[in-house]
Amino acid sequence: MKILIAALLLCSSQWTFAADEQELLSPDGSIRIVIETGQQLRYSVYYKNSPLLQSSAIDLLIQDAKAMSAKWKVQKAARRSNNSIIISPVPEKRKNIPDIYNELSIRFRSPLTLVFRAYNDGIAYRFITHYSDSIVIENEISEYQFPANHIVYYPEVVKRNEVDIYHTSFEEPYQVKPLDSMTDKTLCFSPILVAPAEGPKMVITESDLEDYPGMFITGSAANKLKGDFAPYPLEETILPGEFPAAIVTKRAAYIARTKGSRSFPWRVLIISANDKELPANDIVYRLASSSRITETAWINPGQGTDEWIIGVNLFNVPFKTGVNTATYKYYIDFAKRFGFERIMLDAGWSDYKDLFKINPNLNMDTIAAYARQQGVKLSMWTLAITLEKQLEPALDQFNKWGVDFIMTDFMDRDDQKMVNFYFKMAEAAARHKIMIMFHGAFKGAGFSRTWPNATIWRSEERRVGKECRS
Image (cartoon, rainbow, N blue to C red; front, side):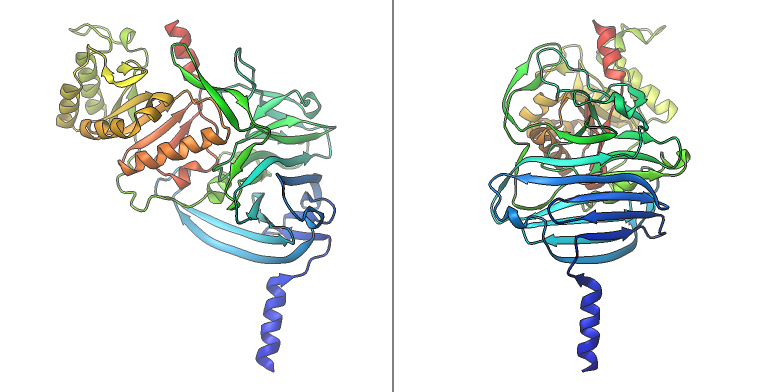
């Protein structure tokens, strides 16, 4: 009898039939999340009992979903706490990362689960679906209702000619304006920073983005922001120019077609009482999926040269400078002399559209042999559409040359198809023990935890380079 009572008590502490409102506290008690269920799914966030987010709607709109009349009726709820250490194989901000949070998992009568996590430095939530067949996501509702007209730091997408608004290299400068300056015509990419006059600052972003479009942010009603997602690309064409790129010419009436049983990206709200804590915050890394590379000893990031405008930045040398063998041997000597691990052969070492059509002024076998002799690694720039087209033979060739790092460039989108491109490239590079950097890229969203051989670079460097070349 005592055993039975103990078992019942244990079950009641883990699984409870929830009412229309539930709360979740951060481990230190400073952050409180209130989740409302019933007719709508909404949540609020408080910091030391002061409202950060007022009641904000969230939803996952699934095409042809059944039993939607019971969509947010709670079947059961479970709570758990975690206190562990994540050891990063490639340290970014720190190698040993404390992962401390409280979690509430709500299973609904419909094939949906909602998971909330409360950390001491932020909160996050995600949907999990439980369908046997594939599903189509028409849209996702992710609102952020603030209690006042706060100042916002946001990078607004500037629409380019000949492409839709969802094409961007994610390199726009941040603006500093009040919330009410953002309308439903304002589209910006995350992360964005919301800065109340008093109280903690908040950063809206996401983590564990896979097989799904990235989240943009747009204005809405008074003091409200909401997520916006690029519809799935149905048709594409190659936009000509110096650096050809695949652009979308027709989009679907949905944002993703995906597996029916899966976890969706985390919606993240970083909460920081002190500005100095923001750069050190690694909640996005903590929320990302664990590494898919079992053996990581070969991943050795380090310093390297990146000459970019190679023909005009070497002087007083006894050879003609440019994209040629003599210049790259000079850079190899430079790297060895000053302790750089590798040099980069940037755009121009091959035809942009054919990685096997080598610049006639380069002898890659000579360069590769000289680099090995000097103990310096090679890294190579690639155009994204060309790398994808020639992926396996190109990676084989890079292995022969001793290349341990590549950059791929000009993706300029984050719809579902492009997000999947990142995973395809990172997995293939990992099989060849090559590190990869994505440029013209969306935010990392924890990608480097899942693929520690990969990094994402967002900068103004490419734009300046293109202007200097024109």
